[in-house]
Length: 304
Image 1 (cartoon, one colour):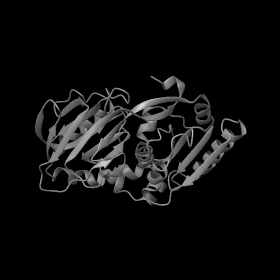
Image 2: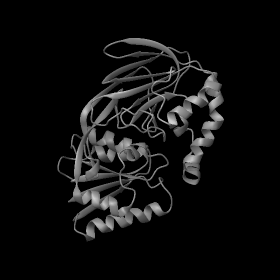
Image 3: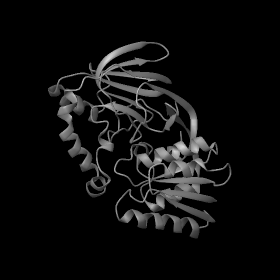
């Protein structure tokens, strides 16, 4: 086989580079691959543009090496290319929700075993205002922490950087008024909220079951809307989320749909996160799902 590795060199810690060398060497030495090309990103959209240039049949697979943001760019590029090139994922970032949800391999040996077995699952991909995403669109309470934390802090402190920034930022969230209009094909509702999450998988922001009914192959998004509440009410809700018991919470609305329009009725500008990146343009959001829109290489036991 012939593979392309698209690597964000600023993701991960020191041993991450040794891990990649180990994987590439093993795939060549055991004759799983007869050619592997490597592309290093230098700036935003490099991964997107390289993946968008893929031609059908040019590579048997491409590997996104980095965090959720790198994966987002590769997914966008592959879909834009029309090449239908299968994508594998090596998690090297601070938060790797999609990889965690699919239980993708974390060691060189298991990753190489996965490539050798080459089980491909066509998975749903989301589209928001012309951009594609594989895992999440979100806005509101703590959802913009990912692009407030600097790359240096992420590299030095890992997830702790997110937690510290979140602790500093949390009180500010309760002074903001977020009034949103949510429209599906069936109904329209206006809510004053703290947060909304449109999820394609169960894992978002390090919470492994924030969308417990979600599946990457069901043709539906899982939408979690957390309504406005007082600061003292948030802690019990966060505990419920950690335990997966938040779906029936009175302040939580849980919807499954294949189309959603979200309008910001507030006076303030609100940042939107999609797969760890800041969505350009902002509201209104038109979100639709493309069933089985992207081929992903997964371990055989995870195929479903």
